[in-house]
Image (tube, rainbow over all chains, first blue to last red; front, top):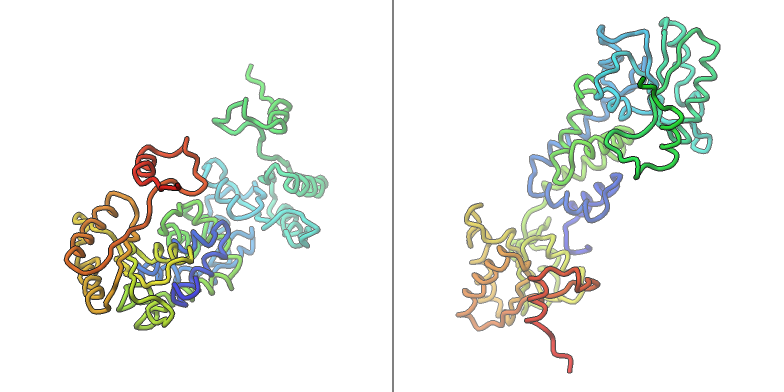
Length: 199
Length: 199
């Protein structure tokens, strides 16, 4: 590309190409779009700068601008249930299902000794502290049914064993709309073992 | 998403979702990535702001920071050949083929009366002017073989008819590596009619 595009355009392509899932081609396409629309580029630049205002909710660890996130500050949320999630994206996904009305606890990761992610980094002591002091009745494990998610869930469940709290987890099985013939055998195994009784 | 993510994060998602090819999901993924990496967000914001420094080369219309783009300013480029391209992305693609050593003329679009894109908007008068004053020997039409590209090419060829200049265009046919059985019939028709004589 040397010589073809001016320096600011090359820099923008480079900065965009660092984003996950974007390669040089997509980055070039986006940069060429933005160079023609300075007002969009400016708007995006301002929005990116404002991201530095975001911190973690001191209660649940969700992203927030204030001390408490909107969910923890809301009087409408059931304080007796805490849903443990891996990150704010998982929180958002569960929230958009529209059936959970409790509060969350965001780990910002799953246990991974290799990456230096132990219980402290995942704010697991803070979870136990919340369960104790807030008179929590139920901890709903909302972690993904992956190896790392299961290991993290097992670790948390063991710690909660000593506390007078109900512990539940998201159901696993076939995704809605999924055809049985295309389901992988682990999912099918889980769906069979956790089969629901209809009658 | 109301209440789940703080305002700066929602604004960043919104600004990212305006980019072509990005939906709300990808925008959310990118914003969540950037909120964890303030230095990347800052770098990208600065790069986007710097895009405002880009203008059009007064000779060929390519993006540039200076009066002339790197290609027009270079003494190594053959001034007797001009390749007409739709936009800087097409210029970059042709340039990366590494076999064209002349200069370019960037239309920034193709003829489209509906979008208000006539000959003046596409800098076609400037092309004729360059051909006349620079003693250009060949105009290579580097437009896409699409309906709009063909129409624009035909228009330009007609204008060039009166000038003592050779006019060529990019060859059309099967893309390299493409299997004949999967080629569409228009491409095949073109490949048959423009067949090369080997012996």
